[in-house]
Amino acid sequence: MRIVVFGAGGVGGYFGGRLAQAGEDVIFIARGEHLQAIQSNGLRVESICGDFSIGSIRATDDPSSVGIVEVVLLAVKAWQVSEAAEAMRLMVGSHTIVVPLQNGVDAPGELAAVLGERPVLGGLCRIASSLVAPGQIRHTAIQPQVIFGELGGGSSPRAEPLRAAFEGAGVAAEISSDIQAAMWAKFLFITALSGVCAVTRAPVGTVCSLPEARTLLEEAMLEIEAVAHAYQIALPVDIVPRTMAFIDGLPGDTTPSMQRDILDGRPSELDYQSGAVVRLGAKQHIPTPTNEFIYRSLMPQERQARGVLLG
Image 1 (cartoon, rainbow, N blue to C red):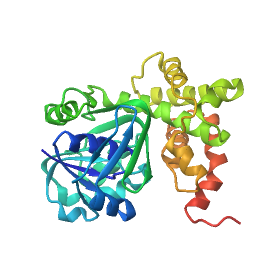
Image 2: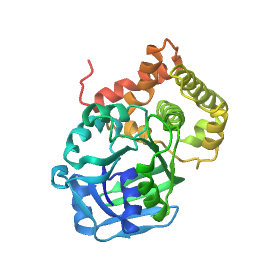
Image 3: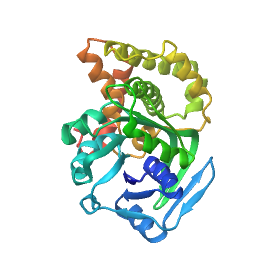
């Protein structure tokens, strides 16, 4: 099975690396110094599940040179999805499946707008990892897992080979019969945590231990839960306390990727996380004051990172 990993950063580098380590036919789409390092020296991954390296690996910055594949794992940032969808057109054939692993809930719709609905699955991943140097990925927290499934729900025989490939690579993988609910559960977790950590400039442990910050986190989650219900998403009734318990179990120095991007002055997924809550809530007349406060507070830095001069 030919698998393209489109985006070889912390997420794509880890999961694609595990698949390649297990002998799957993996092709990475990367760019710049990271691509050069992979082509010259392979890929190195430091992981709480065991370090590994792959000396010989296929990587390119030219998606049109790859040809049709069975699977595209999309691991670019959320704001890069539409551009990536255009670039992958020639890789998508009649039996290709495209699995987005972005934070947020917008990626499947953006992919379908370019590629049509047929190849697109819903998907998500659970991992705390980052690109720490060209050719080097570091996985610091959370047991890695990928979940994917048909956007309309139900079983997905066409996704079974990918699930089996992940299983063979030692990665927990699940085909969800309700991928919309699974994606929204991840959305609730990552959006609230990223927003509060970014606006407070604090790691997870500090946010959880300070009552004021912890309350802000819970309020952000409750708003996302209300928006999900307005869209008839079947989240578990205990989604907020369950998510809070999961966050309490994370290493105290954990920082979400959106927070790191904002603090480092890079473009972030703010519009696809806190901004998406505000946008989706407004469409259903659901108030989201906590998420709106976070979004507005972080917007000046986001605009500056994207080269929009402030007056």
